[in-house]
Image 1 (cartoon, rainbow, N blue to C red):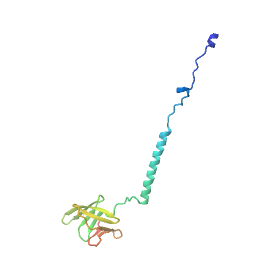
Image 2 (cartoon, helix red, strand yellow):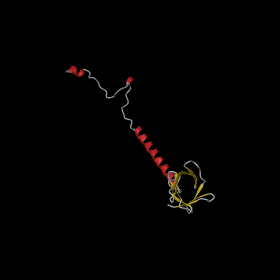
Image 3 (cartoon, rainbow, N blue to C red):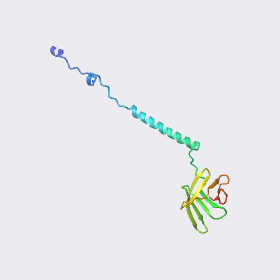
Image 4 (tube, rainbow, N blue to C red):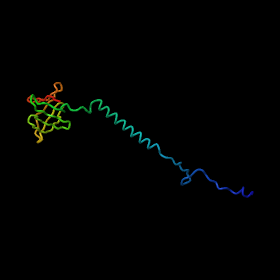
Length: 147
């Protein structure tokens, strides 16, 4: 038994060594990088929401419908002009059933131009927000809001 006590026992080290006898770094998961990405993404989203809110509050982005949209009477006649939000303009004469479709476009603040289905342009129309009316520059054609 004395011999057994003197025989060397194999030694096991709890340290793992890499090539060249250097201790290997402990295996860890890299959790800091995904968290950092989510923080950056969240920061960008918050920034986009703040910018969009500021633009709406400051009125840079106009969400109100154009004042021309609606139905208008032409002078004292039964002739009606309807301006749609999609840029369509429909001229109707209910007494005869006549109807013609064209387009309208805003060319400047309170300034509009009509064009027929064939592309013929009308004289410039001006919107008067105080009188809530549309008219040509020479007042030869005046629209009053009907509805």
